[in-house]
Image 1: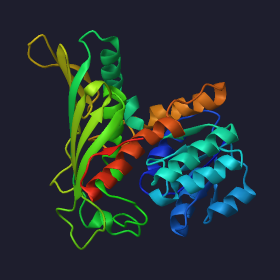
Image 2: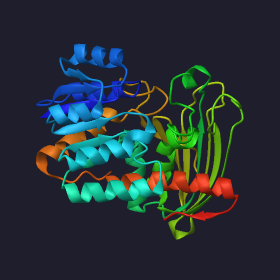
Image 3: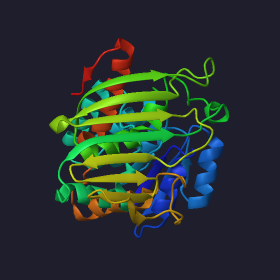
Length: 335
């Protein structure tokens, strides 16, 4: 199976590593507008380097394209690839506007090809166990949830040509870092019906155009309330914290560990994948190998990949609704 990787920046390393572990997959093309980055990845993989996405599409016929470019390019590149009959594995966010979410879903449907959105944390072992535990109803229904992301992104992180820019990153901590946790909250606890949000810049005023901190009140199905706080203005990168209160137990995800407190007992650790060798950041995001392997299994077998344009847009729509809510200072329904 021939593959092209578009965008050879930091996050692409996870894609290259995961693809290198797969059998019968050959990276035949790499694309980046920065010649040195494309040339470096081409030398490492034996692929042909391109510096223009459209030129690559004209000259190559890959079975699948991985898109790891700045946010504002995600949907437009994915739509072009799908319309050319190519499967797409797309970094989050899948879209940066409500119109784009509809355009992407339409392109996927009409193309008959597979589209996967990279929400790799759904594949973390402890997240999967939490999902199974909640789904079993052994401890009753979800009653509430809270989540915290406290990370550090300083001036150096925003020194490139797109991070921190409203027209290219299209948001800050919420659309870039916290969107993974937004996705997990709605995936584990129920779809989001409405949101009341506040986004602001606490640390880098005058340096970035986007928010470094966000607070959300998410109204989920069945009357469940979820509170989420995210910031890039902390002094370190702490493990993501998600706590889910069930009728008869509490589940707590802390990075790559899962704890359970049932029937009034103390918290006990029931899953620990910390300290393992994975692609991704050591404080969160170890599911790249698993999600990309699953996506290619779907391509080979014809099974439908579950995190497609519709499923992947759920978190994007919550984020986009949060920006509207913050701007208008009012509750906004998520459609």
